[in-house]
Length: 136
Image (cartoon, rainbow, N blue to C red):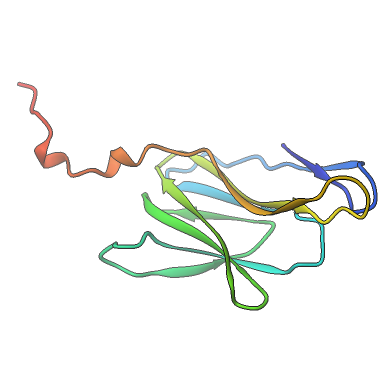
C-alpha cells in the first residue's frame, strides 16, 4: 500500500496497492505518485560495469518480472536529462516497488521529484562464491 498526495492543490491523500503473485523471479511494481507538471520515463538496465549491457523501459502502473542480478533504475526527464538513478538488487522470490514521487504543491511545502526503490536487497549475494570458505 502506497499513500501519496492526491493533487497539487490540497493535502488530501490517495493510495495505490498491489498484491504480488507467488513467482520464482523477482517482481517489480512500478508506480508514479508524482504530482506536478514534469514528465519522466524510467529504464531498468544492467549495472555499470556489467558484462552485458541491456536496457528496458519500465512503464508506470505495471509489474515486471526480473531475473536475479544487479540493476540500475534510471529516471529521465522529457528533455532527456538524467534526473535520478537507484540501484536495484533483484533476488528470486522477492517483491520490489519502484516509485517516482514528489509534489509541485501550489500551496504548502513542495517536494522535489525523486526515485525510490524498496526494499534494498544485499548485493553481496552476487559476490564470487568460489573464494568463500568450504564447509566439509
